Length: 286
Length: 306
Image 1 (spheres, rainbow over the protein chains, first blue to last red):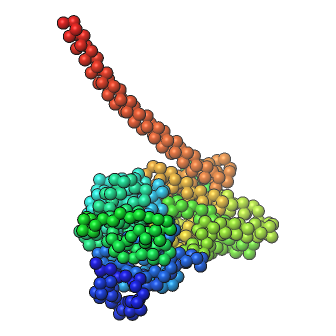
Image 2 (spheres, rainbow over the protein chains, first blue to last red):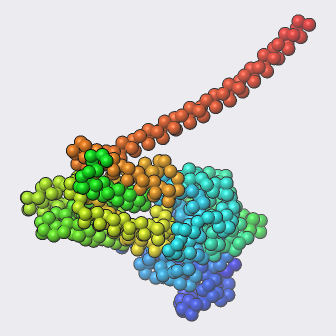
C-alpha cells in the first residue's frame, strides 16, 4: 500500500524538501511523484475568528487509495475537505492538489466532489437530473455554450454508472436523498476524475440505499482506479470500505491502514470507550 | 386605438413596464433560487439613498443611484466572500444604513416630497425618454450577460462550491450578478418605485416556478409573467389613478394566488383520485375475498342439498 504517513516526525523535514523537488517519500520507502499524490496536507492550520478548527495536519492521500476521514461532529472533517478542494485557504501551512497549491489549482477536470447537500436540493430548483449531470461536462467559459445543447455520451455513461438512467428527466426537487446523491456522483463522473471527494454522502439515506451507494463507490475505486476520499462518521462503513483512514478531532488522532484502526484510537477520537470488531483483512471484500 | 395609448406619457410608461417586467424577474430567478431575494430589497433602499443624495445635490438621479447600488453590491459581495460578516448581516447593515441616510437627507432637504414619492412608489407621469434609453440599454446588457454565462449562472445557482470546483469563476460572476441587480433596480424605480421593485424581481419567479420546468424555461416564463403583470398593473394605475408600484405588485400577487390555488386544487384532485384508486383496489380485494367465501358457502349449501 502506498501510504504516505507524515505523522512520523523524523521524516517531515525530508518530505517537505522532497515536495519542493516534486518527489515525496511513501510510507513503504517508495519515492512518489507529486502526480501520484492527489492530496497532501503540509503543516496545515485553519482558524475561524482565531479559533483553530484544524491544527497542524500532515498526511497525504496517494493515487488509488480509498481514504476515509473519520471524526465526531465539529471535529473539522468538512473543513479539511474544503481545504483540500481549495474552497478554504489555510491560515498557515499548505494543501497540495496533484502537486499544486489547492487555492490556485486549475486542472479541475481531475477532481470530482459530492457534497453532503447542495443549496438547490432544498429549493424548488427547476432543472432535470440530466441538466444537472450535464454541468459535469463544463470545460470552461464558452460564449456559444447556450447553443450547444443535446445529449452527450459522457452524460449518458455517467447516468448509467450511477444507476439513474431512468431518472434522467425527473425534476431534481422530486428526488429522494439517496437519488440526489447518485445524481451528484453522476455529475462528478462525467469527466472521469482521478480523485473523487465525498462529504458524508449517505447521511439521511436508508440502509438499502447506503449499501447500493457503497457498492457503486467501491467499484469506482477498484474498477476505474479513482482515488476516493470519503468524509464519514460511520465507523462501520469506514472499516468495510476504506483502505486507509485519517481520524481527526481538530488534530490528526490516527492515520494509517484501516485495519490498524483499533479501539484505543477510536476511544481517543470520540472521548468515550469504543469497541471495534475487525474483519480479517484477507477475508474482506478487498 | 384605445384612449390610453393616445397619450405619449402613457406609451412611455407602457414601454418602460415591458422593459422592466422582462428584465427584473429574469435576474430574480437566480436570486430566488439562491435565497438571496433580500439583496433586491437592500439594493432598492441603497438606490433610495442615492436618489436622496441626487435630489439634494441636484444631480442626475439615475447616475447617482446607479453609482450607489454598484458600490453597495460590490461591498456586500466582498463582505460575504471574505466572511467578514454573515451574508444576512451584511444585507441588513446596508439596508438599514442606506435607509437611515435617505431619512436624514430627506429631513435636511424638506422640499422634495412629491418627487420623492414618485421614486418610492413609481409614477406613470415621470417616465422620460432618457429613462427608456437607460432601460433598453440595461435590458440589452442583461440579455447578453445571461446568454454568455447561462451555464455558469445555472451552476452557481445550483451550488457555488460545486461550480467553483468545476472551474467556474464564482466570485466574478457573483459580482456581475449583484451589480446588474442594482442596475435593474435603479432603472426600474421610475416605473414601480424603489420600495416595490423587489416584488417584481421575486413574485413572477414564484409564479414561473409553479408552472414550468427547466431553468432556461423558468427564466423565459418569469420574464413573460413580469411583462404581463407590469403592463396590466400600469393600465390599472392609469384607470384607477393609483401609484403604479402598488397596482403592479398587487396584480402579481393576485396571479400568484391564482396559480397557488390552482396547484393546491390539482394536488387535492390527484389525491382524491389516488384515494379512489386505493378504495377501489381494496373493495375489489374484499369482494374477491368475500366472493370466495360466498362461493364456498354456496358450494357448501349445494353439497348439503345434495
